[in-house]
Length: 264
Ligand SMILES: N[C@@H](CCC[C@H](N)C(=O)O)C(=O)O
Figure 1 (tube, rainbow, N blue to C red):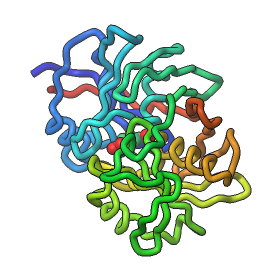
Figure 2: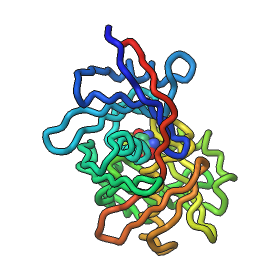
Figure 3: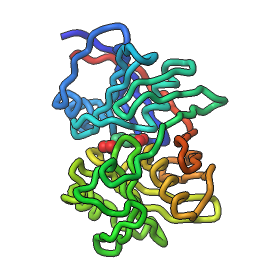
């Protein structure tokens, strides 16, 4: 056992335990990540992140969901690791190399190209990802977008009227999504898009950066909005920009809460 420093951070209330292992070894299993993320028996967080050395970028980022599953992308945590690095950086992720820039009170990230083909999401069988001929109770005709992780997006009259705590897990685990899915419900208002997210492996969160990117891409593809667009989540607001054919840009805050130490 050795003592390891960690940072508790959040992006709009989507919270993380972040280990900076750029200069030392830290082996972490999914089971350990699940125990550390547990809000009753561990430190508590939506995602656990390890910053590691990289041969291709300034550093690499390993991401675990609260359930201990390893995933490729987390938009809010990406802003947090850029803030921790304290300068503009390139980050190696399971979703490719992402560029992060420190701005005035916020961090912006080039999140790369969205995946729009059915097998990029992935879905279990071919279909149009812009208007999918499927539904779960009142949630129908969604769009699907990959931001390196799978998202399904439902445009609804009022996000607050959707029982996402009940329908979220049902849709997350539907066989249509062989790698499970993050479930987004959004409505359009005068000040932009309003979004609630049921995250794969973490449940309802106060914000999801990749969810905001995927939802903005789906809304722009459907010509509901043009970029840049404000995306309002329960924890606050992100600005997302995308022009068809290009990469997605996300800008928003990254907040440091405290630094601690734990035996691992
Ligand atoms: N909170 C994240 C997304 C984290 C991963 C997601 N739950 C998945 O399983 O793909 C974000 O800010 O993007």
